[in-house]
Length: 459
Image 1 (cartoon, rainbow, N blue to C red):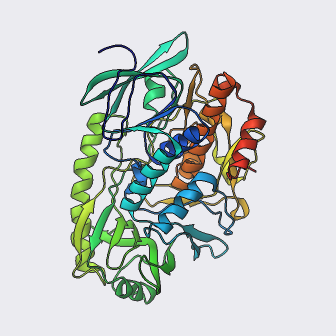
Image 2 (tube, rainbow, N blue to C red; image 1 turned 135 degrees about the vertical axis):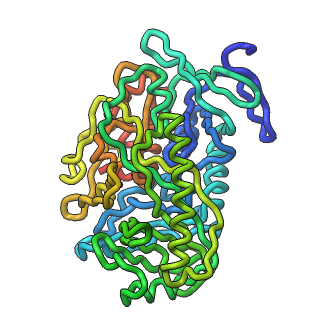
Image 3 (spheres, rainbow, N blue to C red; image 1 turned 90 degrees about the horizontal axis):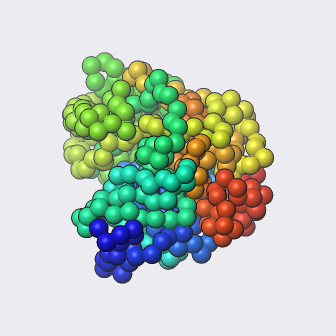
């Protein structure tokens, strides 16, 4: 090692040789937006990501949820909204699809479907256009803390082991890896939501599938509970058709599997149907076990879908995602968001983001997924304090590892809400750098005003 903040290059001339203003650990759904926000504010910004692309959960094939409330009022805008617009222009998204019904006819269901490869490209280009540096294929392996202040993160990649230093570090790892390594307190967890692998199938006759469901033919367990059918135009099509379907199917050993199918291109479907319980996403052995069990589950479900579900008779498995983690570590922040805050639609004075998706709990014991709706189908706010871990200065935490209870996380972890969190912390970090303050000392009114000016919805 040549010293703190080594010099490296890649084919777009990334040079790691000086201190950064802001480093974002984790280039997933929250981290991408945080890095764009920070870089646009003029801060020298580095995004560190373990994979060879950015996106995290967003590239698994499931749509953005939670950008509108259950009455079709937009609650997430700003940079996330610009991202959706760019994907539409690139021909990789149909934009927002509104008006689907939950089982409760009073509430609407909305989504923004997109092609994962389009997201990877658009997010990458928006990062570079903003002036952010991106370091891929790099793992976080430690934090450097002096007198309670985080100074740097330790990373490992093909070039070796390095320390990357910054004035402010944002943890968007999903598992609060940096905060944990820095000594910030974590919540005690008695239960964790189950894990999933998303898989893609091709050669599917969607219209035959939908017709069978509407007429209750061929598949038991349909037309119950939270059944949703959302229609819209698919990519490259002018015909309105099904893009999102959800319900319970009796597919495996007479158990009713929660089954969600998303189709953004003709003949292809992304399916969310597998579940494995008792997997801790912050434990390597659990992750390995989860990957193995879920891959078995995928192949079992595929066989049953082809056998039992109309429209899938000639379908084939095309691809699978990495293991999808819904819940692992959560920090103890200055405030812990609660179930009551969410379903009551609470408005905080230091609100910097809004959430509107119902509390969505994938049963830790393997039972049915449970939904709890927000009062009057509205939304709630997330206070800035939820992103400030105790005992460590210079650190912000956003995404599904924010300071929230198990129940509140069931809503706050949704991608639309997570992106709003990312814009909030990226902007806050930039203000901290500009004003020479710790993130804990940022002027909340100034932060809220800047977010409003940039199109974010905080009120």
